[in-house]
Length: 302
Image (cartoon, rainbow, N blue to C red; front, side, top):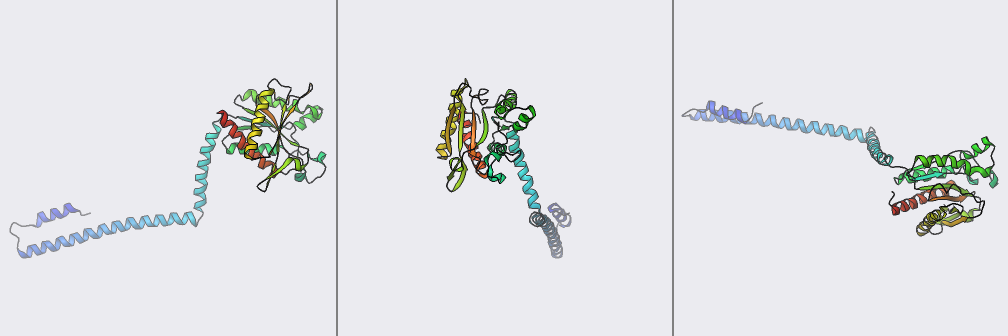
């Protein structure tokens, strides 16, 4: 391709020592023709580059918005974001332990039955509320362990009575605590048998299951557990007035420890009652995750 150097070479080769008028005119004509030729080539090159870029841009836009490429790009970006969050989350040790000593406790509205004694179910039960709490904590980048051991089934297999449920749940709890020294809180989640007007509250027109905290007085770490339950209660009341039913202390010589002797900051959470819906239960699980995060933050554990 000709360039500026070619023009200078042409001038050097054609310029005589004493040029005539015809020679000057001839040379001027050649130079103009050469310049026009070079200009056309440059224009063609620029136009080709512009056209190619415009074509590629058009294809890309068409792929994104007409042929579904937008969804693919969105999925890829989301996947990258989720992977980043997941990696950050997976690098953290579990801080919360969730389990259910009475795992088959269910809800009348979910089973379409009216007799509270029939509100038991192998699948649609209180463990779903524990699962919701686990997810809500995960959304806040707090890792937890959710123990879904079928305590009721093990009682039947061993021929044990219902009153030995805490012995069954203790086995897995103790084993998991031994393996996970990072655990800071242990939450045994139940539902009550009390009527709905006692276990439900409306906040800004939305129904929530109320929360009752139960602490055993027959453990050496009773005060620590009571302080922990009281802290949760107070924070709930500050942000969601009326959603907590308070803290109950269970005293007596034959009183069960509810496994709360295994770790400080252990408590029974009674979320709602037999007449509540899972939606109401889940809303409260989300609220509890928010409060738990605040407690962890205040202790410098999150």
